[in-house]
Amino acid sequence: MNPLLAALRGRLVVSCQAYPGEPMRDPETMRRVAQAVAIGGAAGIRAQGLEDLRLIRAALDLPLIGLWKDGDGDVFITPTLEHALAVAGTGADVVALDGTGRPRPDRRTLAETVRAVHERTGRPVMADVSTYEEGVAAAEAGADVVGTTLAGYTPYSRVGPGPDLDLVARLSADLPVPVIAEGRIHSPEQAAEALRRGAHAVVVGTAITHPATITRWFTEAVAQDARSG
Image (cartoon, rainbow, N blue to C red; front, side, top):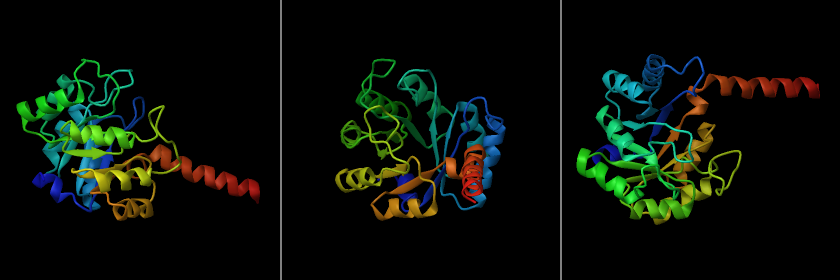
């Protein structure tokens, strides 16, 4: 196993991203957020956007999982080889990309993309998948690590209010590569349960780094209590 991935075993990676149009959608802000979660004990950072990645890389020595969200098609997480090579060029330690079975914009297969990233950059690849079958296929395609990032975010995957821990458990038991639990992990208890289910590491984003959503959880709970009172 890649030593960098081995260093993340049993630990927390924090996703430092903001949605387009939000006040925090700014590379300098994301750098500061990454520094803040590092103080809190994050073992690694996951971030998107070339400038975000460059600034975070310059500020922190933690393992950095990089991606580039681009385009309005179904596949928009590091959608092409060109995107993947650019992510590697920022200094990101791991290149994350869409690992589903959907067609990629550059018409390359997942295996072709993974192989090219390995050959041209030497970087490990994280494949973001949404189903068990996609996880198996991603590992067979050469991905170094598989993430459950897209579970519930494709039209054909199971949607739930929380993480798909059953998917985490199945993939962790059956794949020859590490599995990272990611997606709708909203509490420390869910993060710990993902590790108990076999996850190599856990990525948490919204529940730590997205104040608009966190505030909404509280305001809705308060409003509901007020109505019931």
